[in-house]
Image 1 (cartoon, rainbow, N blue to C red):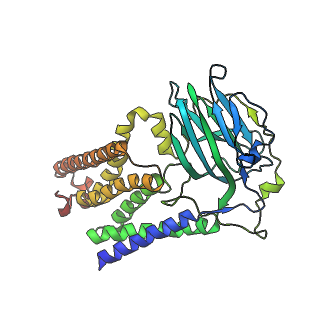
Image 2: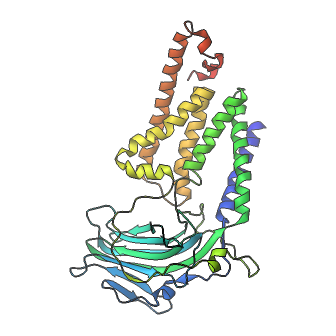
Image 3: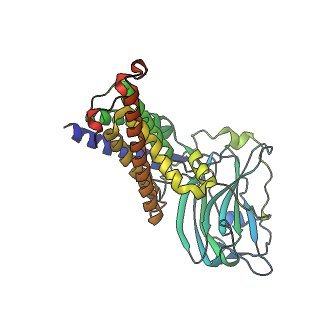
Length: 392
């Protein structure tokens, strides 16, 4: 019955999380949607930029050639105030787009976040890229500035060596987090912590401080690497789009919409941005800086918490936590729509190496402490000795 209860409560937790996550946002009252037809107004002619299709549903095409080796254009959003976040939907399609010599020299869709007071630096956030003859399909996510609220603008860049790409179906909706999510996430966090504690205690009776410490480490890993994870762009879980709640005229509008003067942002040709560092959680930024050490980072990612689990709970229980944690990290990428390929299989393999390495280190540590115990009996607490369940 205990296993049935744990399994049932886990399913309920995941279902509640998915439901609340996908209904996380609501429309900002008093603000309209924007699309390409609206953004097109007031855009001057830019070499390499072409508008196609009917006026009410235009397609924007960026092309490079001998006369225009690089193209970069900003599309200002008319009367856009400072906002907390934007819900975006659009599609990119490339034809013969040959990438340049650097990884960022492709077709890019970016957001510029301008500080309302105009004093701080403008934040540039790459949100999508395209190359070769690929079609992105319909993309859907919520973009959030690092220092918000901020005034948004759209930037499109073609930094490849040849070819073209189209932007179509753009829809921009200003959104904010719902009160339901702001409050409910703390109840979910407490319920998840209680579930991990109950799960560990179902395996073996251990001192409460050990169980609580291991559960806290496990939950921290889930928050940083599973959900919300390290990603700056917020994507729906499993389903295609966030379920945006419609607001009414009686809902209060944010003060910044009416009270703050916004900086003047103009449409037209701009200088290409060049390389823009990855944004998001600390883990994502470290991975971007140390991308050549990706494999070692994956080893360390699982080795550190597994070693902590082993020191607190024993090796067998450490495996029971570490393996589901490694699988959850990769499963979250699939649930958020990032896909799964052979690179992820390699990541899982090195996650396994990290777990194995942590268990080897733990065994040597325990062996060394056991040898030292006769000489220093008071320095080694009895509960650091290996449990019977450690023999694997």
